[in-house]
Amino acid sequence: MGELIAILSGKGGTGKTSVCAAVSSALSVQGMKVLAIDCDVGLQNLDIALGISELGALSFQEVADGGYTLDMATQHPIFPNLRFLTAPMNCGAESVDIASFGQMLEEAREAFDYILLDAPAGIDAGFELAARFADRMVIVTGPDPAAIRDAARAGEVLEAMGKDNVRLVVNRISKKMVSAMNITVDDIMDKAGLPLLGVVPEDENVVLAAAFRQPLLGTTKKGAAAACRRIARRIRGMSVPVRL
Image 1 (cartoon, helix red, strand yellow):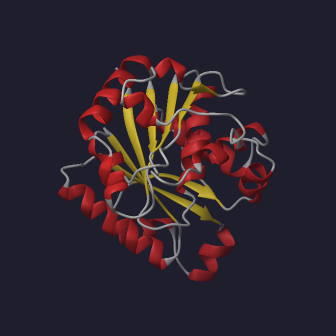
Image 2: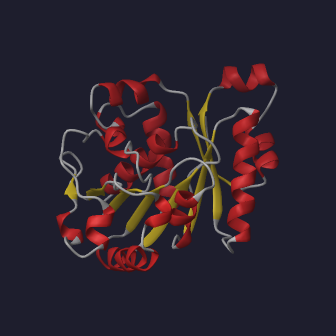
Image 3: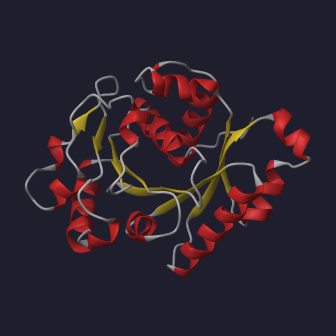
């Protein structure tokens, strides 16, 4: 039975989608069957981070409505174990039929080891849509005070939803930055009130990969790519040291 993982953030600009794409890719490279779903209804960015924006993709709504099957989800050309469903453009998150969406996810559990749901930023309807059926929640934050505060708020909303398997990823961080801000990763964890899943360094290759329409893990093995591979191993239950 596959596991549903919602990738969330309290605010925009934390690099949540880039983390979702890289971790999805890493899990697939490690031999897992992965389905990445863009849940940012009305906006579509996960395909860019995956380096497949030029490929056509079904929306999760088209599959949930029964017109298409999960085995018709777009297969990644570089990572064959990774498939993708985009977000619908012609509706809002609040208009997604929850029952059919949940049924689709249950079917996905039977076909995939991991299903990663890339939620829109914020704590509105799209946040709830992605988190509602998830077994595990990952909140992505930056090291800045606003992002940390919003990550803490997102954690509170998840707690109110009855979700207790919540972990934090601190993204876009550097040793120079934390030194200048006089803050540590432990401080960020304390302020967010969440246990740590991983730390991802600031890395220009994330932007460059997207600009050249390539997946991050297909362009480099260092920096953010290496950090996301470590996160993928932790998701799989392996003991991997956290390092910046």
